[in-house]
Image (cartoon, rainbow, N blue to C red; front, side, top):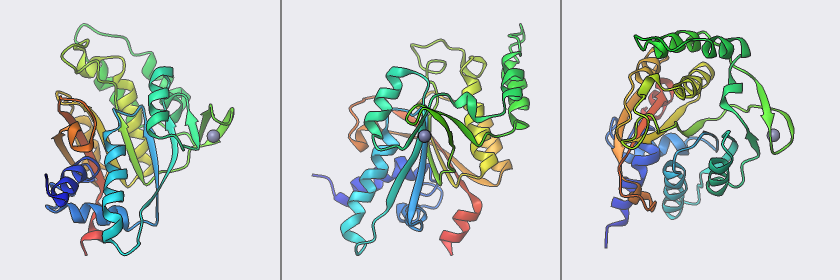
Length: 261
Ligand SMILES: [Zn+2]
């Protein structure tokens, strides 16, 4: 039987490595203290991965409960966003209590910028991703979007923590192989722009283990975040998947400094 504290460390790696702490700060306890320094954590989830980070968050909270003198982390899912019906059903299963369910991450940035990105043609040189990135960097961020839960425009409440995953088909061995030039990379850029522009404190981004892009790391550093990338095992958080996943984690430098004091 494994030592419970070892399990906790492994699980923390999901929510917390990306929270930059397990690997960068060295101790999972510091990761947790960043989370537990908040009374209530507002979470958002965009086109979520396979739910490992969400499970890890719930799990670390449950494991911590008896150890922290009744101080319980309260996570409040503020919204999810997913345009695919099947994926949305899976996401609803992982995060059932979410108050707002937005239908399309593309509606999180200004329409004019989205139209501009959509108008970029595939060139022989394959430089579409660079052009999209330049447009995304200057895009305005929306304050509301259509919510399928309430059947109207709802405000996009700013989360403290974002648990998301981007489309894996362009990166997985069985997929298209398009990588950054894949049409779905627009979604990754919108996710990035939205959170860095709003200053979301902690970002956890999940994808297949072969996922590789420099743009998130570059922009995170430019925006004053600490950034780590690690490979994790879904089985550590009870998800029955034999393959490793990759976690990209960014946390605002100001948060990190406040916690390490
Ligand atoms: Zn709503």
